[in-house]
Length: 241
Image 1: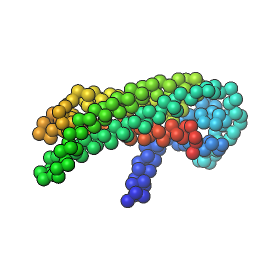
Image 2 (image 1 turned 135 degrees about the vertical axis):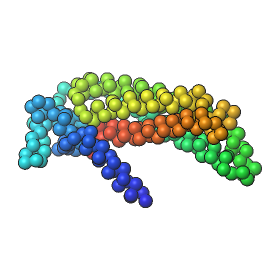
Image 3 (image 1 turned 90 degrees about the vertical axis):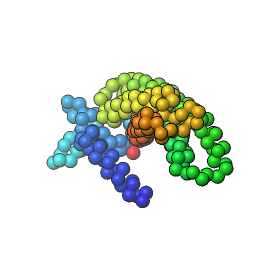
Image 4 (image 1 turned 90 degrees about the horizontal axis):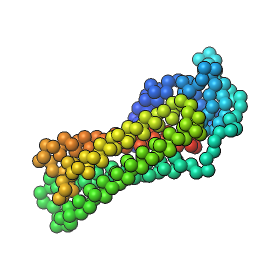
């Protein structure tokens, strides 16, 4: 089952990568995957990870990157602000999504189970606290993602000299998507239109909560994909592959 899921996600990511990246090759030093669109007019590219300057040629349909030089004067900030700042949204958002999923599960159980043990009431009483904790985690992860995006943009403009690498453009676009969808989810949660203020649960008798709850959980699900992609791509940019 797990292997089948891995194969499915792998095939989806490869299809997306092929469409977005186009033809790719790997740096012969650090093995970071780069796109042909990263090359300048002379067929040269500086690897954003290890800093080697490559002359990339297409020989009989095969990409041949040849290392010519190394970029020695790359800015090396002592405090790597962006990788450190990325831990907050990447670490906290899954916890917020887990809390929202727990609230949804308890809401469903509260509706479909008419005969519940006596201890169930004590669980229900704690749901408003869980809803508040989920909102705090969601707010911190979304707000901190703005600072993470800003530090990443500074890195791109200074450390990577604003070169239009596909991998960095992907991170920029996904960062904006995460911030926008996260703000929508945070607003819906904070406005009390998804979870009832008194119980912390979803009122399935309310058509408004059903519709807005669907939007809310769609935003969370989309952002889980986005944050996983950002973490994976960012890890490759820092550690190679």
